[in-house]
Image 1 (tube, rainbow, N blue to C red):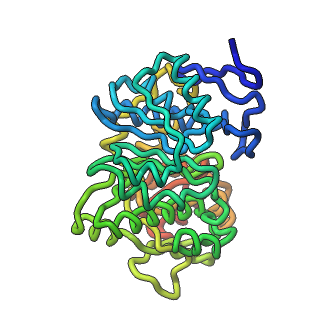
Image 2: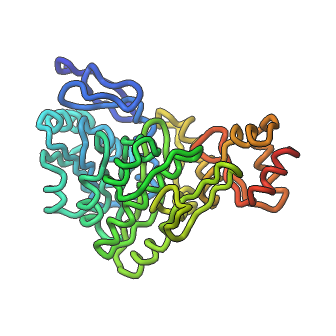
Image 3: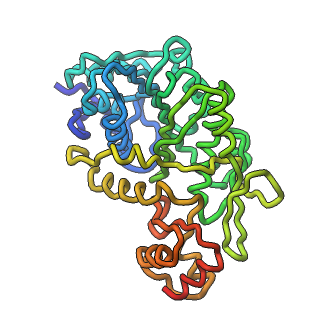
Length: 368
């Protein structure tokens, strides 16, 4: 019998009881005591794919801000590993609901906790720590990167996208220690600012933060990063921080190693956001509710994994050259045929990445 005020939903192969007035789209608003957002199913499907590729038997896995428990319960139920799964939320109603959901799915290897996440992380260490807050993750990042075991993973969600996009640069500076800026590629600089913040926080503890799968979609940023011990590794990661510059007249965008008058956004991570090795092990299987979308993103991520930083949009090139934009795939092929690197990007359906100098790029755009 379903408790009053709850409804049953199915994600993947997991049945979940969630508040009847759950959020079905967008970033969501808090309604009631326990939050559940249906639109985040895609992100949870990606988590399942990630867990299937990375988790090992005996791992200690934490969903730190679990709410209804949707992500953590799915990881426990669908990744196929016998691990110590811990679901935590300081809201007692959420903890009670998680226990009910765990029991309904016969997940006897799941522990449910009701603590402040920072207090829990002061007491225990984990191989995987998931931090999915309502808004900014900054209150929990330091504790997470400190208490993740060596070579473990921290997964972070940020829904405070406006400051990172450059809408509120002062807020970005306060929260993340980096200046954001509006630009045609602001979604990417926003994500890179977030990753750069994780790198700097980990380095404070002589730990390296190595991006594995960092992406932007819908209303949020999501980062999966490996935490590795060692001051030398931390120093190497710090060296991959830099700044973005955008010349509005020429459309040229560039990555600067050091801060200068030309720096528009940063410091931010300038290295790869995606691990090709990890992506080879991730499979968008049919038992995922958003498998079609997962396959689409997997294709884009694989193309983009070795691409340079900062993407272009066909519309801005068309406006600059006064030429109708070609088909995206044709433009990518033209650049590759001309000896340059080029790929589509998940950041924008009309976006692409290339290492072609802006002059060559604009000329090829006119010819395509």
